Image (tube, one colour):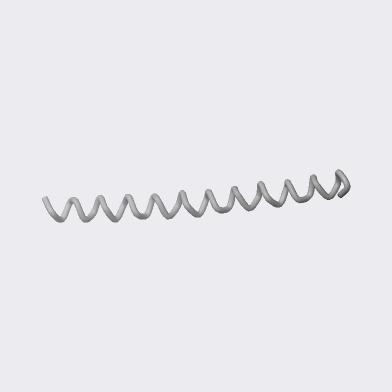
Length: 43
């Protein structure tokens, strides 16, 4: 393995992790909004 290859792998890995975190974050916000609406309907 060359240092350039390792740098590329690290860059792609970090970008992937960022995208996954974004996906989880937006999904979490949707879930929270839905549970808030459900709670409002109950009361």
